[in-house]
Length: 184
Image: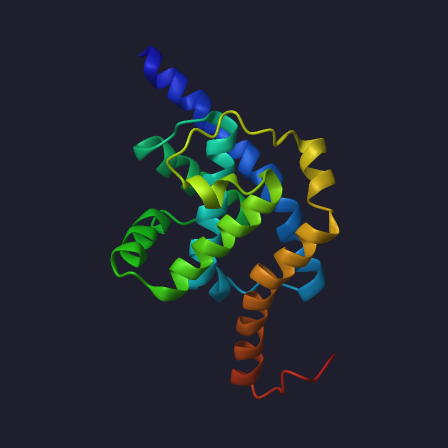
């Protein structure tokens, strides 16, 4: 029973940290792009990018986290960040990973690059199995607002996230018979 309560507490802390870190950047993207189409969230690249970023932040916040506990953090944070209910995101991640989907893997790599910028190059050097508890990234709400406004972070976010979401917006507009270069 005690283990269950501890896991629940860790899930809550990790989810809150991931949402506090990622949600402001997603909100800025929504503002810049006008909207984020639901189809963009199901893109293998975006799935890989977001789930890896959620995982990185969760591991920074609570240290060792894996298995069912990590799956719960990923699912709940995904729902909070995307505003979409998705009981199948875990299955989607497993299928994309097993298929070695190139877009999914690139999304994961880009999330690691962004995470490395936030906490230093240690992610790229030692990988995801390292002990993350000793990193010095402050994930409180007020602290994440500060680093999420950094120009270097914003620039990478636009390159890694906004650019891929824009492709979906262009696809939708083209499908509706609009030129992607028309502005309303």
